[in-house]
Length: 310
Length: 240
Ligand SMILES: [Zn+2]
Image (cartoon, rainbow over the protein chains, first blue to last red):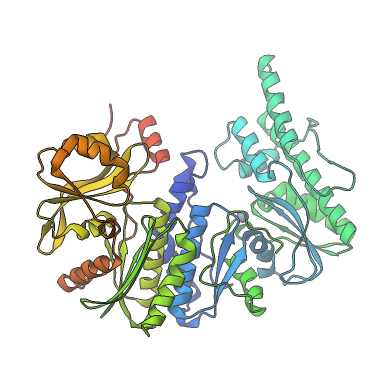
């Protein structure tokens, strides 16, 4: 990895309490070429050194995706470079590859504000979905609980920080679903926390935010770790990738690492700056599509609901 | 010098190629189809047809809005990336001014309109000056009824744009025989006009600046609400 420039809009969106798609799209147009230039400069390469252009094709906010897709197409055309459309989740999984080459077959647990998925990869570029969330993504549950606790946006890291300061004394529910299911569900847990706080308020009881955070996080982490282990056993793999924005969560990292050590599973966790959305991971995933000669045409569209499995 | 022009700010997809002041080729469609899918293939096939490669393009002109936010961004991002990656000038022209060019021979003033929903329009009032269209009443987005009242007394007016049909009854009601309407071919913006305007701009000042962002003519709803809630007027002054 030669460079990985991220132009975060967090400061712009914080005052709105969440990402506003129109604001995000406008900002992307303003920044796009400056950011590409910065990435080239930091890598100390020029456009002549490039072999291909990879871009997130989906899923995501359509207006934001369109900026990347339009820019990538224009760059591909103007410099005669192959164009490679990449799935956002594939990118997250390949973030781990930038640190340590992936070994196959593997299982990936992808957890972010938009996704909670278990993916099986028999080899490069091949994805099979083993399970996914049936309602809220784990990151979404984190954000909602954080809001109820009055924590600033984005709430995930705040909960994680608070959770380190207390023990999980409240027994919030874990949604295991059917015995053999590798799907997830976090809306029940989210409601349980919200109801618990509501009831305490009604009774005039106070609460310790760190205890709420620790208990909520323990419930999420236990389900994530347990289901990841079930997926590993079901597929018989010995490599597990943890990816996505929520993989920055210290509680989750520690629990999953400890469990993998116990079970003799090799775990791949990208460093924090590669867990959140970034372009290096898209380049990594794009490289393997490029090597297979799977290029996109100029009629490629942004796919807000792009399926991972083609 | 080859100018490539791109306009995706409305339903119309326009791509034109000019060699100085000569139109070499122009593609215009007026379809409810995805600009994102069709823009780049249209550019590629037109250039191929003309035996031109990306390296032959001397500058890129883009319609900078107002119009469909998404459409404007697709054209703008494409033009911005093309020019940045080849280190050539990018010139942007108001999408309303491009449409107004269709009425440059009209002896009165020209009023281009794009529907902005809820009986609002992106519009402005233009007059021919030195061979191009100059805004005599600044571009704006707002209530069509209020706009038409404001236009009373401006003399003969030529209304241009496919969306004008939606407001035709109110226009005639408010302005009577002062209102004139465009022919079908005059109601859609021409990328060749855009290219030519950009070429003229370049001739006048070759040190043209690459503009960072399109002109949406209005801030996002989220920002407007936030400013209102925080007691700041749109121009940054305090509301209290
Ligand atoms: Zn992501």
